[in-house]
Image (cartoon, rainbow, N blue to C red; front, top):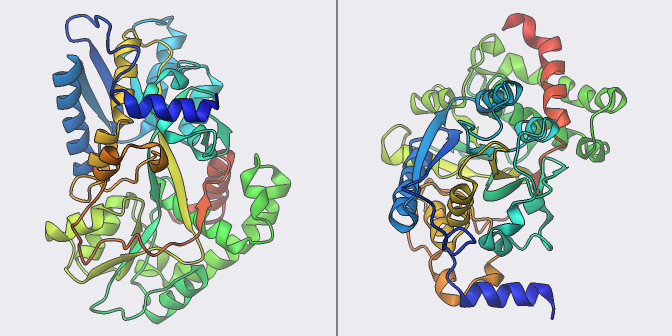
Length: 396
């Protein structure tokens, strides 16, 4: 029998939240420490909801350890390994991707070969969707499971801006037309480095392929000239003539709310209409994606190698990949994070969970499709960041 057909039939006929751990005695409310970014009220609220669900359904206590920087949790696991703590780790689940995953994989800090044992992982259809098993160009090899997708979106105030820029070149024209009304965060911030990666891809059509291979000095020397030529022109046109740059992504939204900026960007499309509803952003804000390409990635969950309650951790991940949890997460009023599930493998009842009748004037119109830029190989993140600070860092 075709294994894909067999998997699809099994998952449609059986309860979606079942896992090898669900029929086992997990003990008296085992606790799973979930280290995840805590900088968004929507994300925090969703994880709180997940905690309530796994408590009610599986008697698991989920503790969200809110992180400002995921590397802090990576460093903690590394320190525990150095101290010989190999079975009672303080980090159980960790929301990671990119360079943090690469570091954890390199130092053997993640549980190996577990993702395939999660029944709902098959609903991502990894055999036909390599993005589910590739993290910033690195094979996941069963060491993490996907739980959401995100892509870069831009948003503008249409009270002042009639036509927003639709590609990286028009963005420069916009900056000339509206000097001081656009900026990007320092590349220490995830959104700042994301902007640089987007620009590097869009400006290097001839050398794009190099960005999807491990970085070399030769490759960097081919990619950065176009990027730096562009930034040299852009910086004097930015907010405060580029002499001051925000340090965190959240500061972009505050400057947009004060109408000091007229254009900004985000990796969380749903946060924009939510901010409008909270009156943190003006009602004239509109969201869109660049037509030359939108930087996109899949984010993942890892289980650390020294997790004590592995069965409970797996159960939480299996729930996160259930149609119920994925549909809840995709709701605009909850998070608005795109699902990683392959809808062709879902039953009609499960597909119905994702239907939405709500619309918001400031929300991204997902009917307008644009090309997606995959994240470059993880080695490029540090390379581009270092090159940026070597050229511009003296001012900051």
